[in-house]
Image (tube, rainbow, N blue to C red; front, side):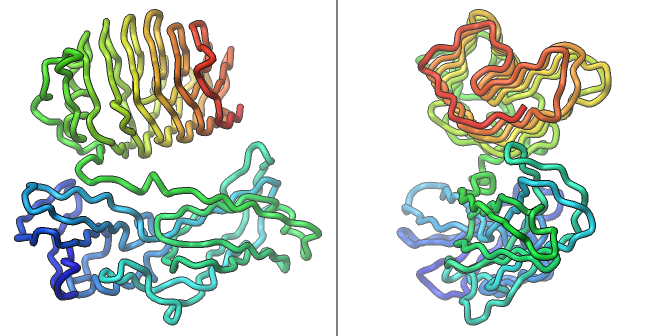
Length: 439
């Protein structure tokens, strides 16, 4: 933490040791002063004064890219907390091919100006006067790809000033240059005819540049839900619509997940955004007249679900919205990956909001804008949908604007849809299907 109104060297630190999920410290703050907050991963060799210019050369390809997140916030002089939304300071670059690529080619993407440090005081990567060229290279393998099913070749991280520059992609004598604007928190995806560059001189190659907010790397630390999150003791409220159970933190959400008494005929209100990072998510049921009201808030992050060796696989934020239950006013922008293992799987149902929507159940006013990827083989039906995997209930006022990739999934009956996969219920014209489906 740096006080931006006083000396640059006035830096306070809270060290989070390996395996820890929380750390606390008390400091005296000045009212109306602007403070810079940072979260970074390193090998333990940095000290407080190093924060004014951390060198990241050895961390450019790491999952956290060295110094990872930064934000500014002002204390109002009375509140006991300051909320700061931390945003990744590095750029992420991804290359995808829409054509087949043969093995044994050297593929290199060159970024002409990357910084070697990040200045805490200015909140920027170091100036272009001290930047250097960065190259990311791979040896290709045999890849089958198409316009409808592009394949990722690699991703990497760079520190770059907020400026346009020409990235050069080269492969065995052929090259193409693409102008992009790299800056902190931005994810640049290059998609195009990479296979056409594997000739000595490419006859034609084009790349589309996709700009997108790096939402999956932006979060409020208090609202990050991981496998290690400790559940709160209880939820405020009595569970009625007028006095709902309030979910105000990741710890509250964990309590709601773990205790089905809150999900049995009761009304719960999400009162904050939640980011989920988990390696094996267990979705929740709603029981007999329960309501989960998203309150217009967002659940984001990376949700992974791995099915067992036998039985059915249900995946989504929620498992089953049962009789007379409702999910409403919820936005999900999480990337959900479902892997059904084994050979005895009966059904596979996966949805951006819920795996199953039972008769008399309802999902209303919800959106899903992430990427839902399902892999596995079902002995019986397979249902995958942007809102619900299988629906016997009512879906209304919902929007799907994400991506479904079901190319790696199969079953006796395969049902894939932007709103609902296997649909026996009601899906009216108030729903909007604006996403992309690969099946």
